[in-house]
Length: 452
Image 1 (tube, rainbow, N blue to C red):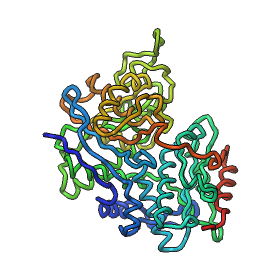
Image 2 (image 1 turned 180 degrees about the vertical axis):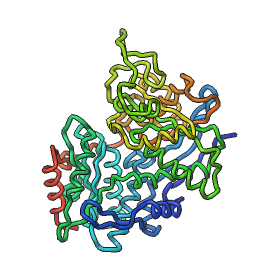
Image 3 (image 1 turned 135 degrees about the vertical axis):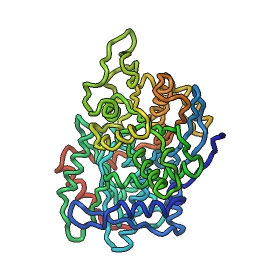
Image 4 (image 1 turned 90 degrees about the vertical axis):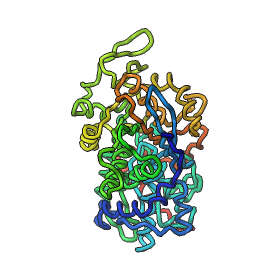
């Protein structure tokens, strides 16, 4: 059967479904210090809201036929302000904040740790909310905490170019040996937050449900344009697999409503890199113990192993970090994802930079033909998620890790090159080393008076 080409706005096309899912998952509005949440209400879809959501586009279509496997492309990178799937959840988070501000008059500060892309998308959504008139700059701010090594991924925007907006919406950069320390530090800061008279509410947005509700729309699009009939896997480059878990939640909605066949629920292919392979380790061995990874030996040109087809057969460095946005170690989501893979089918695979670069020309040709252009040189890439996922698919097929005839849906969750954006202005970056500096930086951002 021919694979259709289709595109949708994943938020406005499924607004009622998303609104219902947020209402089901989001807690009631909370006001306790360190636990603030605005509730589940979204704005009505008037002209300003539609303009605000206009970048929430996704495209579906054929990508390739490889060794008897039909590969579809689900392109989630259409927002030029982010080029990643983090757009969808961030737009909904900010929309909920906007509705709370309208209802109560209380300003909100969004606060989250990020490896980069989540923070870029949250800032882009705040920028869009201001630009479309949904909110005033003094009513809504975004403060993100990221590892210093992610500096180059942050983008110039009105939030960094305009001095007043830059002071209200700083990017805090943490120097440290472990990038995942930003999560611990951000949680510690949020837990100690105190309500000060006249200060905005601080919403710590790093909650799985804030992302699941947006990613559920992937299942709605699939069901509308190319329903699964069995024998299909969804492939995704993952750190904690929020995207696939969200897809599964959307699929469960459809099945519960009698709109989709539970027997046709797709399986999953998790793709990771050597810098953080914990979800694959858990899937294959039942825990995150790095001792279960294969041992590499030095060859003439690369480090190699031939004992585990789920791991790179060759790598320039067994400890390399191909994509720093994937840094999560021992993710709690493995406890949910592992049973889903065992129930519906699938596996995990880890890729190396050498494997990605050796396949890059082929991957670029396939994606360009499918309407997703890539830079001519892989050295220009600044986000490897899409290339990682495609490399994982090709390796898994070649190594017979995918059952014969299985269809594969490639989730294009992120890709961008140096030519796609201008780096953030240094004046918008605030270096921090611990809790005291984070608190001081937040206080300084809140102290910026309303100027427009």
